[in-house]
Image 1 (cartoon, chains in turn cyan, green):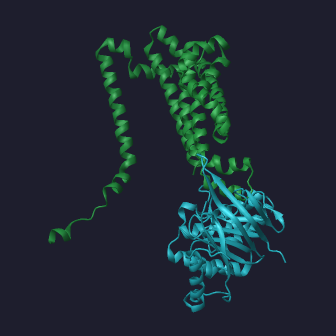
Image 2 (image 1 turned 90 degrees about the horizontal axis):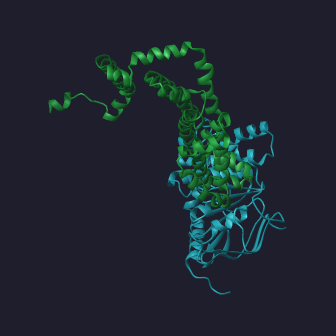
Image 3 (image 1 turned 90 degrees about the vertical axis):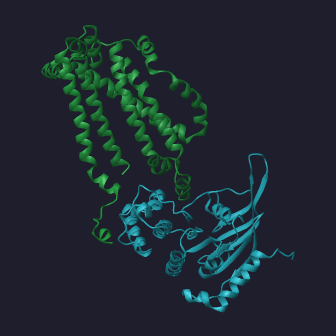
Length: 258
Length: 267
């Protein structure tokens, strides 16, 4: 069985104004099976966000191939949706209208269905009562809920999340991680989640990809055999700690030639 | 000890000031206006030179009443000014918006036209009046061109700056959902630019009023500008001032109206 997302030998380089070449991604090979929650962990600058942007179709790459369900990725498409690090909500639209924005742009569902879906998603992400609020009237955590709902509303095959909880305070982050596992448990959408937080990656994922930088490349792929649904208490178990330790080592020791 | 306990608690200065602000502004501003009118009236009555050169509030008021009763004032002069103003203003806003969006969005267009725009914008509008008169002759077209040329640039420059400064994070978000260029403009770039665009349109309004009066003063057979120029030739100061008051009050009202619209639109 082939995976939903396949990356083969993806290479991406940036050429600066003075002609200096920086290799952002080198020989990145990765597969994300349908229905799985896969995280990419790595230090800042390792190219994980660049990889996510390439998958989203927001950036181009120079070599290799990226396919979704066998179709090559050439640009943004309705089969993918992105949850951005900064919520990127339209300040002149209410929470309700922001949730519906992605659907409105794609014009694949009729208006009545759009409204019904928006309502149920607002409820799913716990924002009932805040439909008429503008982004500036919402807390950082609530804005990220809108951000997530907007992406889920388009019913993507692959949900791309770019450090969505990085800018939140620790408590809000933990709460949203928990809610994300709850939502994911119900929906089972395929997720590619980028983070620099090892604990977050282990807690959320079925599989954790570690990346190291300069040039950005995949270091290892680790299965997370922890049972679901997961409770925050799992973070205090020895099995969880061992996985964290393993990933930490992958990220902090130089690669050995195999 | 006791002093501390019995001290009355007062809200911070900023809160108190805000609460009194509106009424205070009205009383102070209106008071100064009334005072100036009284001084002007008294000076005019005491000194015939002042009366001759500056007229007086009562005489200006009487002239305004006479204007109101005079059918041609409204049906000919005010109408001519309103028409020229409105047509020129609309041309400037539509043209400025269109070209502004194009220049803000397309780097190639911007870089091609920017030097040209800066040079033309630096030309004093009044210097173009004789040229436009030669090109378009007396009449409506000439007035529209003058008004449009005076009010075009604030709309253009502000629209361009606003569209150009559209939040890249929001544009990226919209693009991730597959938004077309048209959608990006309508749902992200233009709403994001709206406050700046409105500021430009409001500035253009003032320029348009100046433009129409200037155009009609220079070459026209009707309009408030003509009334002013004609009165000046006959040294009828009270008519100059009365017509100016009509222009100023209309301009101020339009400006307020536009401000209200802008506040609604940009929420």
